Image (cartoon, rainbow, N blue to C red; front, side):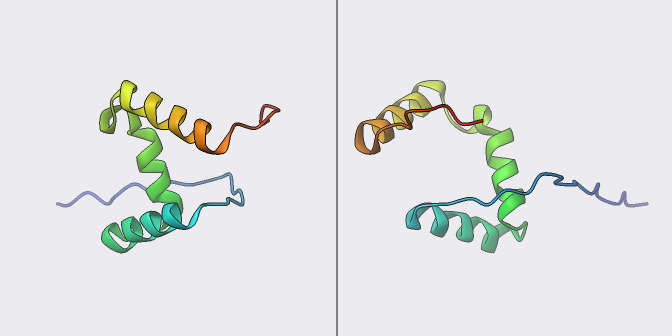
Length: 76
């Protein structure tokens, strides 16, 4: 007997702005796995430590901040 997959509710909906390159990557993931953008982001963020080394992630954030700066106030 096959087990029915669990349904993952996504209770919080937020509008999100993405740069063109990030949006294209997200659409490509959606096209590959047919999960929808929200679920693709959930997988990436929840599995981030398994997917990327801490050093590489830190370097990516520092590179982004060097190029675009960081917000002056903390987000809520």
